[in-house]
Structures are given as structure tokens and as C-alpha cells.
Image (cartoon, rainbow, N blue to C red):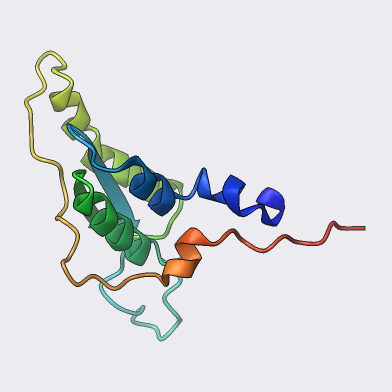
Length: 138
């Protein structure tokens, strides 16, 4: 991805983009993340959140909050799949609809919770360094 080009990566890396921009105003961000209450009862490994969306949401929420973005992390049960997306959209869409003054839709606070002050975080290098270039298949 990005051929190992760190500037190309930085142009799309959320942490870098937020930090380079500086202070934001009148901006909100909702991170909907999959988070199970615990491992499955049958002893199988919990595969609901293999990429660490909860840590990414907390980390990016903390970075955004520090730059003036109203951030919220909405943890919902399930895996990172279309069923989860339907649940997340259902919970989240009334918020922007009310903010945009959609007729007959009341303004509501952003769902979820602010990022934790001492949230578990992803190593900085995983958010700022470009992914290693993969050799072309041949």
C-alpha cells in the first residue's frame, strides 16, 4: 500500500492529517466499534474485533479531541461485518440528521461516550508509518 512512500501514507493517515491540520472547529466524529462483553461462552477465541477497532477508535478519538473535534466512541456487540454496520447506522444516523435540521428529527447528543482519558492506544508507529510495501505477485 502506497509503495512504502511515507508522504503518500501521511496524506491518508488520520493521525497525521488531524495533527497537521491543527485545531478544528464545529467538527464532530463518531467511531462505531465492535466490542464484545467477553470471550464466547463456548471457549472459542473472540474474533469480533481482530483489527483492534476499539483501540483505534479510542486512540483517534483522543487525538481528535485534543484538536477540537467532538469525538465519541460507540461500542456495539458483534463482528466488523454488514450486520454490525446496520446496527451502527441505526444507532448513529439520527444524530447527524438532527444536527442537519432534518424536518421532524430532533437534535440529539452524539451517541456513545467520549474517548477515555487513558485509553489503550495503538503504538504510534502503526498510525504514522506507512505499511511495508508488499512484493508484487509473480
